[in-house]
Image (cartoon, rainbow, N blue to C red):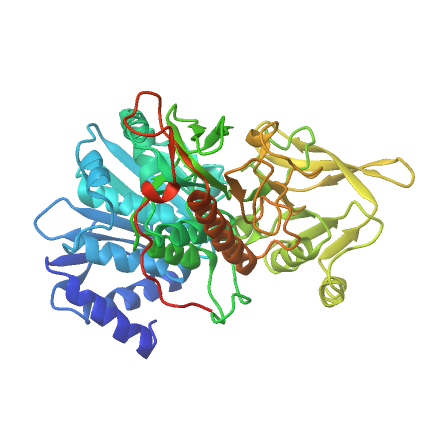
Length: 549
């Protein structure tokens, strides 16, 4: 199961296992069970603290499956299937954490998990090709290690298709809590804890409210936001980041092969690296926070205010907007109603759930063509529907589309409605734009691939936006409002690329710093001293930096 390189790496990791653990397998005579037992025995052979045993309970619910148990305790983590692919990291972390290595969560989060009362039995349905699934699996595994009232089993939907069908799982990850749907899509451990402990939201809002005004507040945690926060923090000034999810759209990117000096990586890995780099500096990162309103400073040198959905407010002398973009929706009846119940956006994540079924891909650009090609290898039929009269995808992709026997292309078509049976998608209607004739396509899944829309709705009436809703910026990433800068996919920058967002974030932060040192700081009425003073009197002396190209 494991090649020599992976075996050597895993052996090194298992030296961190300090408590004896057992890998308890529930197996049958299937090839998958034999494969799983081979994997477990290989792992057990790498550490004296790990043993592989067969479960003698003939009534086990899922086969093949296994649990990782801390000997002599009720600490346990479960997997149904063989956690390879994107979930291999989840397996390694579970081995270490059940084996005594502490989960990588903050002290505040760990304490909140330990204090949760009641019984919480989680089941996560995932696929091995899903990039969003490991975050959820690892978060719930860590919680089950920290609190014996919490249990978790990660189920590979491809291995248990009947169970997936019975539970009506149409998107991964899908999480059940005590038999009821708890959530879908990527969730961090803090987001999960906040849903279980509503007081956590209030406590964090109170903490944020009590913060002193920042020199630079970055709104958004994608590549542009991460870069901006690092460049600002390196200047020795008070820096904070508010983000709904750190990493942004990068978390949904399957493969990244054009980030200069990094020949190949995956979105979640890059997002984790960005967050780890930010953590090297004194940056207050406020997770799971959505900005709802920006009030610019009333006078030069004053404080801007950012209001959050949690009820908290933040003040800062400068603001960097890096809110990125979100999937563009079709905007037709039935789309929202059947989202995650047949309407999906990630073919890599959710494609395996549609094995042998009929699906449509909406959009004929490169993303749509790539999605259709990917899905054609898993599903029975793919129908690619494009609004324009011709496809916009590269010629090489169009040639590949034409070569696939189970793929049909319809151009000049406008999707008008998503159809369903109140449970899941059953088809769609589209209009032939040339004749006005309506057509129906019977299918079980729809993958929307029609581009992105900037996350700037909350900024309308505050900063200048383009007709496409992008924040208008100049060559220094300044917006129409003094002291407010912007970077990344939410702006008018012509090319939406990770490497460009990284550079734009640094430009925005450097421009914000330049604004600070050139703008007199307004002192609150009643303060001792002059009415204004230079920004240099309020900010720390810039940290000495190496000369950078």
